[in-house]
Length: 478
Image (cartoon, rainbow, N blue to C red; front, side):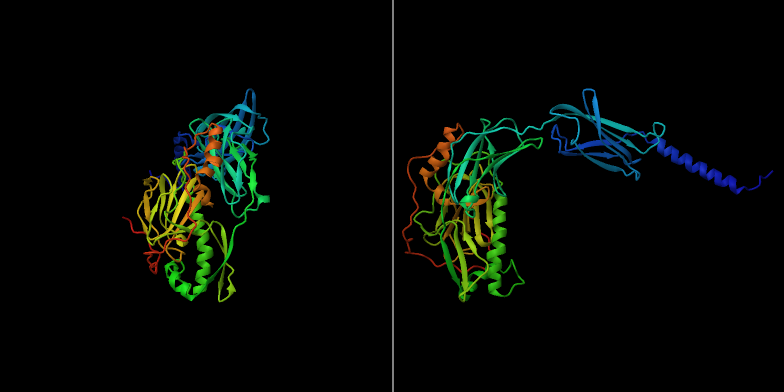
């Protein structure tokens, strides 16, 4: 006998099937969520922010709970319930306004998924992390005597820190110069008196940050030496534009007016090149690689000094863009071999805008030397070189008129006066002897002096500088 067709029966069967199917898949999920703590800190401060990331791709995340426990006390830091049941959820929290004081405690995190396992409670995961609350900044002791620091020049400190830290170094306004831990556990940091700062504004601070985020700042006592730099007015003309600007047209192809292009190169490109040197300055060995004063270009005359400020006139009209010359211009015979000033490692060997073809050597502890306007580069990045080894040949690439070497010294990428580092007595008095007195490792300095010639450069057999190529040219490698 045929049963009569019943729509209600069919609908009921479909609903039961859907519920049963859904229930199967929900109850079928027996895998608990995965949990991770970001970052996985072991030592924390009250204001430090952490995150819990919970993932469950099958059923989604229903809730995340974060609790701290110390002895018999507990406190909930976060309890998040999610309605969207996404496969991944993140809960942020901090330890502010808790009962915790310095010392050990336990962090407990729990996450439950959105399945019907456990009679609707879902699968859950609980993780515990042993942590320490630390609100005490590390203690710092400066070992070295008070330094004398000339405006535009360099100095150093050796210091001890009471415990292992995440970072330490010298802060000068918005600039930071990292310290480097030595084998004896102490730290050494080279730092500058920036050429652009006035005496009254200059005060370095030794900044130390531990793994919990506690920070201490210690004023570095020192003696400031005032110094005024030369100013100069440079007249530029159409002949200069014809000689130098073709090299820079590739940087600004849409600029056709020569004066506009010059100001763009002298301002914007110069700043970009300085930023690149700051980046390169972070690539430094944690120990000194040198053991002598720096070598100058042999038989050379100084044609321009450090931090000379230049204004530019075109048709007797002062230009808005000014510049500061940050190195020594040393002139000898055209295409003279350029020796490495000291032992080190090549960290840059390429074309760099206004500097032309450049080699930068790292000498460790943030100390680097720069050789620019080269007509030829003879070394490669990563190569280890010795004092006096030939790096390339002098030239007129970049914003240079006439064959010469622009020699610079940098502290963590900021250019400082090179004259100091060419003088063995200055290095002994201000760097190596002070480090040795503090019990820190220091390079051995010879007694012989190395001077820089200031008489006119030799002119015999001088070759005229070749006209640069229309596009930035890279050094030929031997």
